Each structure stands twice: as structure tokens, then as C-alpha cells.
Length: 191
Image (cartoon, rainbow, N blue to C red):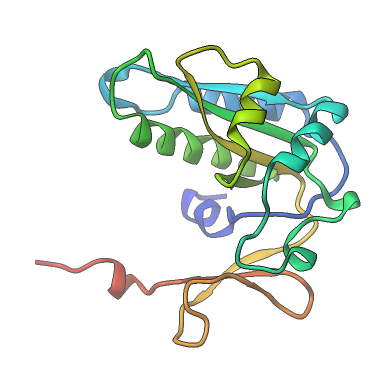
């Protein structure tokens, strides 16, 4: 798959088959973050891998799903939950632009997963204090986001943004995600 095909199809996925993510995919995601570009090569992004089923289950009530949808539509059912979470942590003892470096690392992580057919959902609506305590994060280690991962049990596709859709994603009649995106003309202009 070309990088552009990956970018078109690597959408957010919120419902998953219940098969575990293999260790080689986890290792690819770690390597993708390790190789991420970052300011002054400071490498301040850290990961906590949560893959034991009992630990994945402990994370589930501490994250929020699909803010644009009613919970009965956007929250995965028990048989659709992710099989892996990755906590993305910033080491604040290392100076630099942590926001930019973390964004690049997240893009690399999710693209590496998608290269092996593993879908992802980057989650910022999370219970940071309880998750940080659960993971035993030390002082100076700040939980940025959680990434839910697994093999998607639905599709997610880009659709044109219109006055009717606005920016909010929605489900079609088969419960697949439709993600409105602005046109290229709205995004870029030439001088």
C-alpha cells in the first residue's frame, strides 16, 4: 500500500474484532515512535503498552468514545472493545516542543499499526489522574493520550464536508463511520 493509500484508509476505528494484536505489530509501533522526527532529537515521548486482557478491561471505563455520537452509537459494545491500549507519555524533564513531537510520534505509531491492518483511535478524553496512577507514572511523566488498537470490525471513510455535515463524523446505515473532510482548496492556497 502506498503512503497516500495508507493516509486515506488510516482513519479512526472504534469497534474491533476480539483477536489480539500480535507482538510483531506492537514492536513495529514502538520502533515507529523511536524513529520519529523530533525537535533537536530529544526523544521525549514514551509508551506504556497495555495488552493483558485484564489490564485492557481496567482502562476501558477511564476513556471516552466518539464525542459526536450518542453513547449507544459511539461506545463499542463488550464484543467490540479494543484488545490493546498504548499510553503516550511525555517526559517533561526533557526540554522542547513536546506537543509537536508527540503529534509526530502518534502519526508514526498509528501508521505502523495500520500497515499491518490494525486500526486505532487516539483518545484525549481520558481520566488522566486515574490512568497515571494505574500505570505508576513517576513525577515528570505526563500522560498525553491513550491509543485504542485492534482489528477493525467496521469501515471508516472520508466524505466531503458540506453545510449539512459540518465537521462532525457520523454513522451510515451500516454503522460505518463517515468522516467529513474539507476540500484541498479550503486547506491550501498558492502564492
